[in-house]
Image (cartoon, rainbow, N blue to C red; front, top):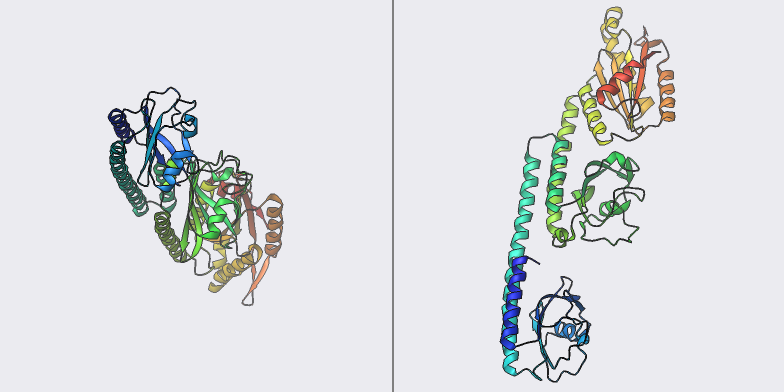
Length: 469
């Protein structure tokens, strides 16, 4: 509870004690779930009062008054004071009186001198209860205004980031950093589903590196993140039980420290969830008043931004497509390399880069009729598609040089792929339009991260391993 509010309530309680000449005056306030009351302010002459006492609604006189919203005035109180649930020992209380404090809780007084409280005393106590209601209502309105201001500030900050002219990955990193700061989260991440819509990958994170996860990607329904993919609604968990061994973000094998709280926001196009934005390890008080509707709106805004980024990238890719081979140019492939290297800096065998060159390609224009060189490029592009399939990125760098980025390959798969490629290119004569074209190839490859850690190093290592076919 805010310090200023607590001081104001303690002041009111002291005034009540002095006015009614009470042994103890106590103010109990209901928790947000309306299941129990907590002693938040008191004035007492007792050494046996239990500060911060928590009383359930089904316990004792205090619980009964809160539940039924009716006052109680008991003269000649002959019961052990410990039954009131806020004394640790009997205090020989002679009278007890308590009134409801609106929907907020209970205000009580007791005495060791007087055998009863008068009707006038009860009216005075009820007037003070109304005063406390006004104070708590005012505090609640101020807190709601602050929360709304905090939400607006968060939206403003995130929109400012998204509208900034940074590159997509930079904006996402800044968005995660700002969200982590606002929620005081220990970890934050963005997970996006893959093209098959059956798995998702952590593409950006703050507080941990995606490469340290037990896998590059996960089944789309795995973990709490998978729950959000499946259900399409925000998941707000201000606290997670320490023994909740089944609660994990991505995988049971993840090593991300204690999972004590979570805010996970679905990212949607229409009604399809394509991603999840998550903040983990925020203090419970930061998440208790989070409004699901506001988080859904935030998810929609980020979804629109990501969709716009995707469409812009697709348009740029189409603009950079070589009309002869149908492959992108090398700039697009290098952009993918930079993105993947940044996201998977420690992942074993995350991807493999193959390079294929047509040896002395510029001389072919002098040896053969004009269309032959272009048709040879088309023939080689078809061979590469047949060998590598559709789940790779291929680029034509001009002058008969090709590059293929094949993600998620292990050494055995790479060697098998290399053999298939060499076998497909091993013929030295390709017939094009009834013209026998004598051609040789050089083939090389390098694996990330076992052979190289940067796109430039990966490119150089693949070139250094060229062998003639």
